[in-house]
Length: 98
Image (cartoon, rainbow, N blue to C red; front, side):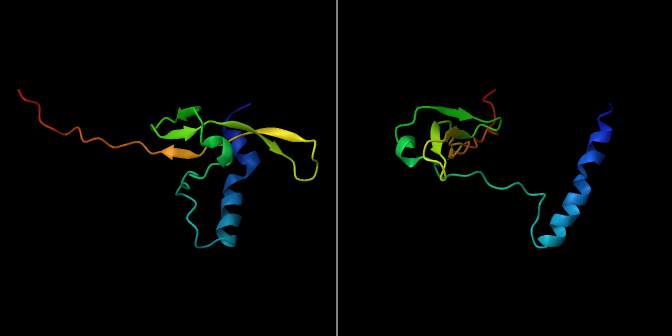
């Protein structure tokens, strides 16, 4: 099985065209901003579980039980993934003292 044939089976270009027709003013090439709101504000206040992405941004990694609205006995694990702190850009263009 070749990897090139996978793109044809999902019809990505057709999906893009349909979305562009439905939302003509939206630019789908620009990625959305990460969510900064904590999903479980009560637990996130004392959170010590954090992780960074490849760009160096700091995210909340708190895992909590998310209860189902229809069944009071059903729940599933969910993770917050809220952006806590963006990477600080440092200016390293200073001249060396040689």
